[in-house]
Image 1 (cartoon, rainbow, N blue to C red):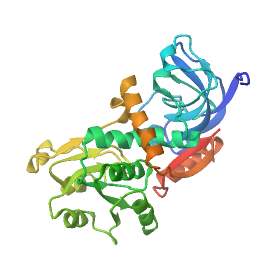
Image 2: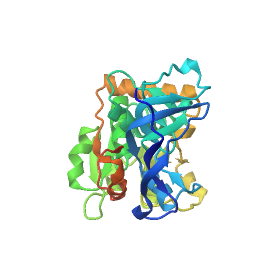
Image 3: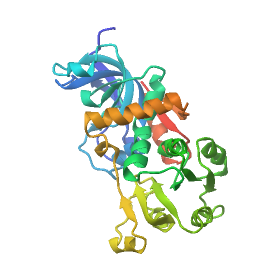
Image 4: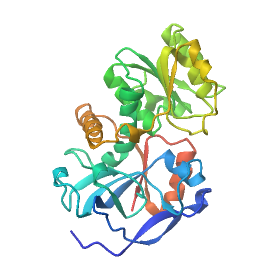
Length: 332
């Protein structure tokens, strides 16, 4: 492997705002701490949460390099990386961490995995955060059972597409919402049994839920949209069901009276992936399950587009448009 350089390109923000605050510039190469791995990035994932940090919806110290996941080759190991992890320079790996919008990223060794044979670097990067989010939602936020009716909002989005595929594998019945007629076939291909175009002049999501469930409602709603759909999600859920609100694509959910839940003994969860994969054992368990599903069940890893790292502003514009289908990747 070639020697690592002293400088690299990365994308930093110094203040919150629109895409104009994304700065593509030169930075010193990060030096891995004793428990970190330095990865030369081959692919970098773009997630909606990146826009939350950019706009200030989620607060973080500035300046910061955005990005939560990537895949590539190990370029260096910290002095105290456990040998039990089995890492060597040159290994192909995928990771979850911070500061991924860069040519090189130093990340905690505990959140790095060797890429499974038969899984490409691009697919591993596209799957690791959104696929694990979907898998932990259906296993932990609400334990979905075969035969359950489930509502997935934004069914062709990054997490939504994974949810549809995993729910189909579990034998659940899925109602998926999409933003346009052009996304209906894709949602069905990924596993949605019933698809509703979620626009005032088109489908009625609540009525569709009632029709499919005999008026009972769905066992779970997986809602990554947030403010605009939360009240309807409560209406759609069945008695003793769960609304898992895991995203804010339309803005943060406003405060509500907890007594509203008593009408159905409903539950509301606001899960984040990292609390489900906090330990190394949890991370390995769910990652192994996900990659096995990808290989054994031939899951479709839908990549919307791979953008040059310098074109990150266009990637943010596209993901915020809510017109994309599948994963957005960056390539240094």
